[in-house]
Length: 226
Image 1 (cartoon, rainbow, N blue to C red):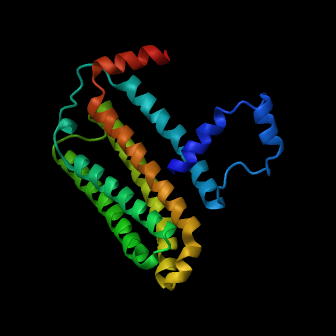
Image 2 (cartoon, helix red, strand yellow):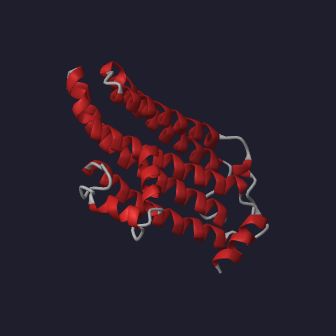
């Protein structure tokens, strides 16, 4: 993921009208990015999901009037635990990526199972927190702050379930393979790793939105987009 972003932004800053750059481009083989079909599909999903979550984020900014009760979500709760779980998922995916690069497939199966278990734990924790919210009298209809929270977490959960579907397909295949043949699944596993990295980024943006966006910040953002 990091290498792709570095190359992507490096390509944006290139100046094809300069003589030195033109000479390089003329000798180019024609393929700028070494991206597999799987990663290309994930990048398309990134674009669609980014637009969707951006619309929700903008709607949240415009629908949160001053003086609304926002205290409940500001307390320590399952949101903090779920955020930590997603960090662990990214950590184990990075271990899997390194193992594949080093052609050490002995721990790939184990780490893939850990990733799946942590992802289901995240979903379970989210459901528990929804139950806590409803028991405290905070429903979708309570105010726009809580309705935005329910909508966002539900969409993020569906996004994660989609990832788990493909995780299940890849994992079921990898678990049946002998160690040397696991390297053939490197493209699928790398695409999954990118997908979960995006899930973490989206969750962190949401986390920032819920915890750091006070009335002053919201007013400033409204002034920028109005």
